[in-house]
Length: 637
Image (cartoon, rainbow, N blue to C red; front, top):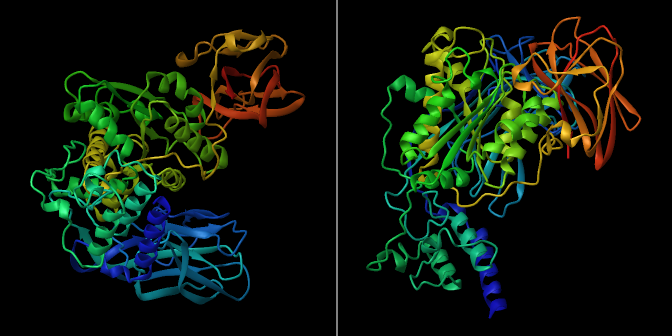
């Protein structure tokens, strides 16, 4: 009987994938053709990220229009390049016009550059569709154009990117624009049988969910009512048959839909009935800030937990913006958005708050102190903000990804949301942080996008947001809290509802530091401070040590692990010293004289290996007369 059911299901799926996907039910309200994408790279990467072994960065060296373009370099294969994920405005079966300007300044007299589309087809296979290829003369901007391109039916996870057919030249792109019909999904006022994944549509995705449930690959615990299409309380191949008939237009509703008394379960996790009560300017900025909703399963679970009266904690980790600079502890975005969560979803005093923001720090230090300052409080919702403190090099990229992974791996399964800010000059690590968020399917709130767009259109000035180059003032923090509240409301819409979440095994930059954390002296065997004396000048790291300058006897200890981080006070001055770190006979240097630092806590990797074993560590100073405050030791387990 099981084999017969499997053969039937396989046959039905084969039949479905063979037909034109336009037969599936799409509930849309189509407006006139409009601009759906415009990337000008005026002071930021506009959401574009590297594809393969490439580096992408906005530059003022050359431009097709305006003062900036996107520079694509470091390519080791022709398919390496620059890419951007196309959002919900781009629909399978719809037609769009794409254009962009390209140029290169090193290489042969002429080179070819391509604009390409990547997507997953209905069977989950990755497809690469070349939209257009142009022959470009060296040092001459050339337009690449693809008109009336129809996104194939069934396409999902659509990505637009630029590459070359053969060479690995560096090149520039600018003024990337897409036009087409802007479709707005109209979610049914009442979700019913057939809409198994709760996205507001009944289509092949629901068929796949149904197949996976019947085959035992997916639990129906969360949506059995929506999969029971014939209303007999049994989910079987009979329900598959009804789904196929519906998709082919042979029936207009399922038997279960009109059965008396067959009501859906009560679900307080989402509500499509609300309307935004914001002024036009704030609403537009909120919409611009919503970079991606991501998988909402964990967040909706925490919202429901708060609504039911259980204790929930909202946590924040980042730099001085998160800590509350220029606004104070009670008026910073973290406190304001926590209060919104408590007022909206809490039942009294059941929503706790932890703010682990720390001025002048990056995610390198953040991943080490996360357990002590944040995760030990078991937060249920976590916001991660380091976009103006991190840098565009691999140690920061790996640390940010490792911090995200560490948070996701917690036993209480917290929801993790990435918050991206920017500096007055447009500096932001948004591209690398978005790449991490996309890999782990996390929500991204982009203050960068919202403020940048408002500045471009003249809706606001930088002074309306901040009083210095980096830190929002009280009104700026209030605006960021508005963005977070908007994100919560959008996450609850049924079209954004996720029914399951698994941490992916794939990585973007590396998650080697996800198990790294600060250790106490009691965890260090045979500890000897040497020429270091107890105490530091930084209040949050009083248990560290300061080099006495009275001799240079090494600090020594042993510990079990795969690697060692040093945590130290850094500054951009010549007096700051360099530590010589010896681990099992292998030496490295860690300098506390670092660029873009102002006398605050910092961290660097001193040693790492593949397997865990006893690490015998010795720390001394390159110059006995230099300043060095060792704030703590981090160990990669």
